[in-house]
Image (tube, rainbow, N blue to C red; front, side):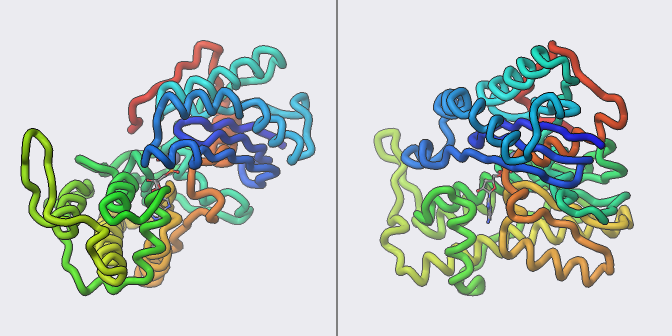
Length: 348
Ligand code: KG4
Ligand code: ZN
């Protein structure tokens, strides 16, 4: 049996978890920093790094206590060391190194994006999926993969500009939907009629598996605020979201949501047709989206293959997915030394 302590600090959640044999989540503690970043309308890296320093030790303690294990009973310590905000990653990586150095336990560095692709396996003892088409949709990534095993992924497509979660966050600002943007926009969209306004779906070439979201974001901006005018180096608009009726704001949100999710489903279908996988795996913050979840069920029916989506608790950044994937590194004897780096840039 493996009992892995996972640590995740890549962005604005300080998280620690204990997972047994890569599947059974014994604890999953997440200290969210949303309240700290809310007034700025987005994550401020310096504030995130400092908050991680304050919270990392109590969060790890709580993960061990909730799981009912001592640090001596842990098989290895895993940490999401790439990609993410460098000042945030460093806190988790340093904590993991300190624990492994002082306890003589093995250290395992885990790719955060690949861990999102593993989140759907958590708490699912009978889960089998491979070969799969994988889709990671988060604040920083919109990546399509062929996934041959938890550790063997091959990227088929990625965003050429904004990630879908980032587009949601910006759309929420344009529509004054609140913070955090993605979930708030999703809520607003569910009250609207997507047919009242038309927004573009960027599909790129007929066989492309890449994504583009900046055109949709700009189309929404102009549709909501009217024509931009430059005056004394500042851009002003004809109107703002505050000038719209509640119904129009809901309808714009619904039009955005349908355009954003349609694109994901169309690309997933293209990838299924090309690879003929045994299943589809979806992960990342946007996998919590209500429309993506219902459209995924339709995709599963249409293609007669399972579509695995994480439980809501494992969609957003969490450490259980880090500990879960690390179980496979452990089984494959893939361990790291104390020189494990924190790496900001994206992985393949
Ligand atoms: O995976 P995640 O927690 O962090 C990253 O690795 O980036 O994803 C966060 C992203 C944010 O952009 C957030 O707005 C988006 O996921 N998100 C959603 C929903 N819940 C979170 N987007 C659309 N609908 C949602 N319900
Ligand atoms: Zn993430």
